[in-house]
Length: 170
Image (cartoon, rainbow, N blue to C red; front, side, top):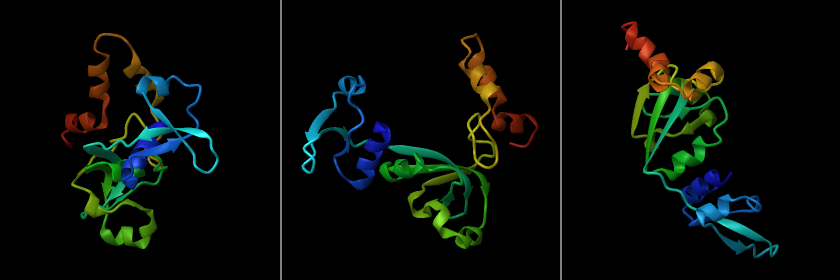
């Protein structure tokens, strides 16, 4: 909630986003967040400072040659992240025609003029999910979290882009 609030503040061009649900958490102390008084209710809320990343990298379902990007799952983080960042890079499951995106323009999450570069990376959200193409690979996540020697190397070797390269497709 607070990360999205900081991204939203940056995307709206404001210095902070008020958030009420942080009381009782150590996050406010650790991050030295300040409070402000809501002028309408008089309630004290935290002022989460704007977060403006230099670069946002998002993975999407489809992208066209112009960089217009579409996500079929929830765009909860992606929308404010792409609006807050100075530069946006997109990886996508597949390249589609601009005409396909024009069939339902309301589904386009990121317009091409905001996108600096695109790469087609099937399986690029792995081990996470990409609705409706694939679900989270929980066993792969568990192997990645294993505190054994070589766990990271083994995880990277399992990645779809490494599998494609090993088959001579990448």
